[in-house]
Length: 313
Image 1 (tube, one colour):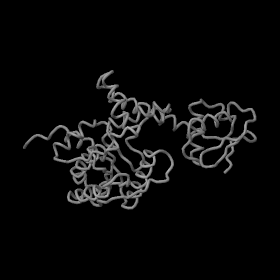
Image 2: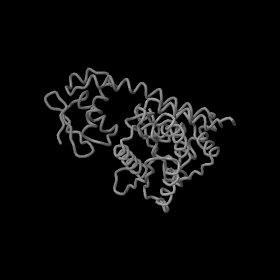
Image 3: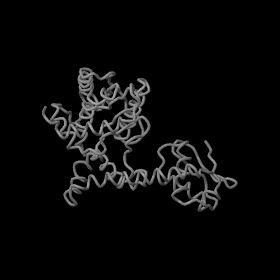
């Protein structure tokens, strides 16, 4: 028997580890665009899942942003059906009119569609093809935005139904696995379009860092995200245990905990919070001089009243 090619073996190990805690007999869905990362993931899940007594399915999201997207999605679904994925389906989304830029709108629509598919099919997990390179890009983008620890934590390996088995696998490995398995991956032109920030990071910024500092940069950025994620998880736990709207009690908390308490509370009533909103909320606690209400995205306002932080919808 010929030895298993190392790229294929690496992906199988990663997927097996990611699925090891899933209850046998469960359905698991692969989110697949047809690109090298998600296509290699899909092929790997098709091999590994049945051996763990799991039922693999596949969903591809058609954002309707490029000519021929419907045809590509249909061909991918046909490929998946031939390899035993049930379901193998297209989720069509409309990103027009959504808040944020085109990248954010497409991402939000995609996750909504994948979450709905998981609920519809009773899937225990939706597997995403993000790699170590994607994680490094995410960290660089977060740094450029001036993000705090939550942003610098990058993408979690698990959050709710979503699972990312390949965060410790580099993009070169997924491409090599596609070659070894005879898979023809689709090259998304958006990935090379300089109109998109992530595309600029991928084509210019990260390669420049690798040239300047060596190939270990990608792995080190991803490792940094993992370390920050651990600290952030602990601080979030402490904040959850300390949640209060009494300004005296809030003022007595460490700033890292207090700001998390405020963010967690405000996020229940408003989305798209920024550091500007959080700074203003914090000032109601520690720099109170009779200032007016803090206006949150979505129309809610927050004031300080009788020693408490109060929400007005």
